[in-house]
Image (cartoon, rainbow, N blue to C red; front, side):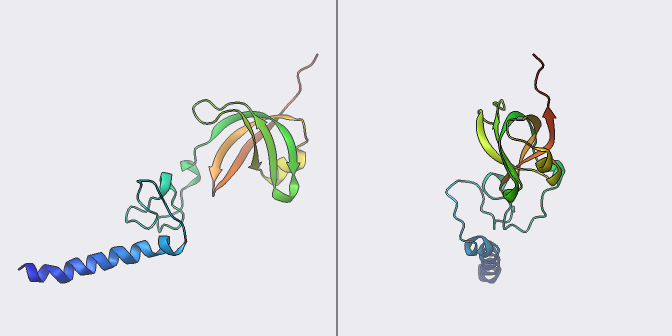
Length: 139
């Protein structure tokens, strides 16, 4: 009876090795304890599904956080703004960083403008959406 299980066991081990191959071929390595991108769960480090066969996350699954800041630089060649933003409690300390933005926002943006928007991480890039330009307070 045990001899009959050997081919089944070998076949399942081969299937697991084939499933893990795309992650190994991508050259990515992981030092955390989470499942690799090629695992049966399809989840990678921190939920990263790059290289996995699972369907792409819908825009509803993207976590967006309110952001307030000031534009430090407009970078049309990168479709991005560099923004010095306030702390986002529970998410990120105050800092200056670059965000991808849509063409309409990029066209209106000017260095020194105060803005609000929704920050998120998409496709390994920081993105700023729903950007509103805040009028300077009257003195």
